[in-house]
Structure formats: C-alpha cells, structure tokens
Image (cartoon, rainbow, N blue to C red; front, side, top):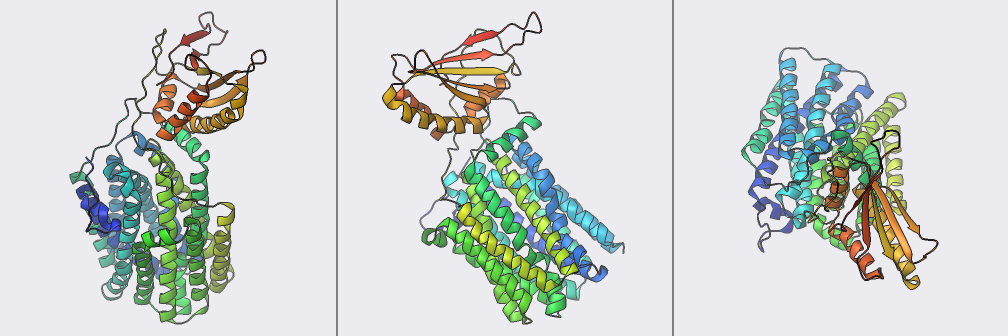
Length: 547
C-alpha cells in the first residue's frame, strides 16, 4: 500500500523518505554504495600498482558497466513480468557474491588484472539485474507525483556517500591495505538483500498471463523506438556518458601522473565530485523551476567539459578538487533529468523495459567511453584524452538543439478498465493472427480533424502492440473510412487494449464525436486463416466495440 508522502514541514526532495518501504531500501542502498565506493577506490588503485597498462586501468570502469549493456533489456522484461522485488534480491546477491570472492582472492594473495576485471564484471551483472527493477519499483512504492523527488533523492543519496566513500577508501587503503577495504565492502553488500527480504509492497497485477520473454522484449523495444521523448532522452544520456566517463576513468592516472600523489588525494578528488553532485541534487528542484530542462542538461555538459580541461592542465590538487565538484554537479543533473524523463514518459506496463533499454545504452556508452579515452591516453597522452573528452562534451551540449528534452509529461499509470468483447468462436490465448476493422462515417468538413486523430491513434496503438495499422477510404462511399490493424494472437489483442492510457482512450472519444452515424463506429474482429488446409477456413468474429 502506498503511504501519503506529502507534509508541509518536509522538503519536497525528502518527502519520499516518509514511506517506510522506500526509506528502508534507500538507506540499505546507501550503506552498500559506501562499501562499493571504498572497494572501487581499492580496485582502481590496486590495478594501477599491478598493471603498467593505462588501458587496463580504464577498463575497470568498463568491466562493471558493460554487463548492463547486454543484460539490462532481459532484466527489464523479467521485472515487468515477474516480481520486481525478487529481481532486486537476485541482483543484490550477485553483487555480494562478487565482493566476497574478491576479498577471498586478495586475502589468499592471488591477484591478477583479469581476475579483478572478471569479478567487476560479475558485480556489474548484479547491477544490471537490480537497477531497472529498483527504479521501476519506485512507481509501485510511491505515488507518481513523488517519482521526480525519489529519483533525485536516490542520486543525491549516492552522491552524499560519494563525498565520504572515496576519501574513506583512500584512508583505509593507505593505512590498512586493500584487504580491509574489500572486507568492509563485502559486509556492506549484505544490507540491501536483508532490507528487500524484510519489506514488501503491493504491485498492480495484470489479469492477463505473463508474456513470453521474446515477446516482452520485442514490445519493450518497439514502445521505446516509437516514443520520441524516450529516444531523445536515451540518445542524449548515451552520448553524455560516453564523453563524461573520461573524468572518472582517467582520474587514477591524473592523480598518479599529473598530481604525483597517492590514494588519499584520489579519494579526496572523488569526494569533491560527490560534494558537487550533492549540492546540485539538493538544488535540482529550484534549477528546474528557473531553467528549462533542455538548457539545464546542456549546461551540465559544459560543466563536465570544464572539469576535463582543468584536469588536463592543472597540477594543483585544490584546483582539481573544485572542478571535480563542478563536474559532479553536471553529472548528477544530467542523469537525474534523463532518468526521470524516461520514467514519467513510460506507462507502468513497460517502465521496467524502457528503463532497462535506457540503462543498456547509457552503460554501453560509458563502457565504450572508458575504452576510448583509455586507448587515447595510452597511445597518445593523458592530456590529449582529457582535451578530446572536453571537445566531445561540447558537442553533446550542442546536440540539445537537434534532440531537445522537453518538459516532463506524466503518462497515465492507472490500470485499464477494458473488458474483452463477446465472441462467437472459442479462441485460445495463442489463436491468431487477429485482424481488427473499425468503420467510421466522417463528413467531408471533418476529414482533416479525423486524419489528425488517426495519426495520434496509429502512434498510440503501434506503441501498445498493434501491427500493420492502415486507414482506408471507400471509393464508392467517400464518407466511409476503415481502420485496420493486426495482432499476432488473441492474447496480444487483449494486452493491447489493457495497455492503452487515459490519453490514448481520449483519442477514441474525439473520434466518436467526429463520427456521423446513429450507432457507434462498427468494430469487426477476424482471425486469419490460410487455404492450405481444409479446416483452415477464414473466420470472422463480430464483436461489440471494445470498451
């Protein structure tokens, strides 16, 4: 059950913490994140000491993010069809397993660059499972009006920890060694699975059976591809991740080669990055009210570009820390803005899949960027890599002109009231293909308005699963128009109608007002049959219009 989160004395950004379920998982996630950041410092610095390859150092970031590129889409489909809570638990268990194995290997004295990358990859698999399910669950745990605050709070919480964890990791690494850092990380990774195990929340269930995985993935990709708002957000985020990851991927080399320092300075600079992100997160609501979302994300790219230039040119730890804070602010503003945009532009039935595609492509961009800038640093110079990343970030800022991110528009998240039409044949769920034909009588004066509504309906129905949508005009009776579309099976037809949002249904109401007839538009459902077998005769099912 969702709890009321609004309270006059609670700042809007903190309001989701009034929900006990969200608060419990959020706190446990921060504990785990603290351990992960301590471990990240230890892994990065350990890699610097055991490998002479700049590329291997940069690949530490790629190893933990690359699994999301391959697994997130599958994980999103699982999260939309099975228990999101269960998916989160499985992902957190994988993260804990990777940390425990890393602790044992370091304690046993068996440390190799490829082993470190392999265990980082295993932890990345856990994140690939957990992240889409956790972010999609926010809309199940909280009211939709609290989603922007919750996403901001999740980013802010991580960056509060980021301001402490790296410095703590540097101190632990300098005074106690990597084994202690890895052991603390393994202990902290127990907190999220315990919190998930102890908490439960209600999820709106569909009256229809689960989708097959291949169908679920196809429908998620189709919805994302046909949603211009989500496409723009994903493209901007992917390009930003590819360019901005240079800051974190090359930072160990900056500390070692340009600042001639050790793990403590590395931790301090990461802490500065986290402090900047924290300040930006707490100011995010104010910034969104004063600056357009499109401009805000462009300014964030410029902030990260300034950070890259500073790291390329300065030899001062203080200057580097200040610009790391600026880069951290740009980092959080971009990721929070695009994440919230994807969530609010996605209905509940597909939000796990749209988020998983978002994560897959953005993490793929981050992994590619880590490899690109590491290769440039190794084959040319560290300065060239950072300056090239700064130039790329300037181009990312300019992309906003071509792919603007518009104001957030919340999609309907409520369950459907659709009732299946009565049929004369006994269909099985996998019977099909199903063909729907809807006849309209439209006066000549309303044709332009009718075509406008039909364009919107084609887009809405195609996103929900309609195939081969067409509109025909009768040559003998020009006022008669026929809309047709197909679904692979009868179950797909039912799913399509259950997926329609309130805005989609409003299109149908507008068409009803344009229809010039005593009766509502006539709907006819048919099932396609071939002529290859004697029993495969064409069948037609007459039904009342879907309600």
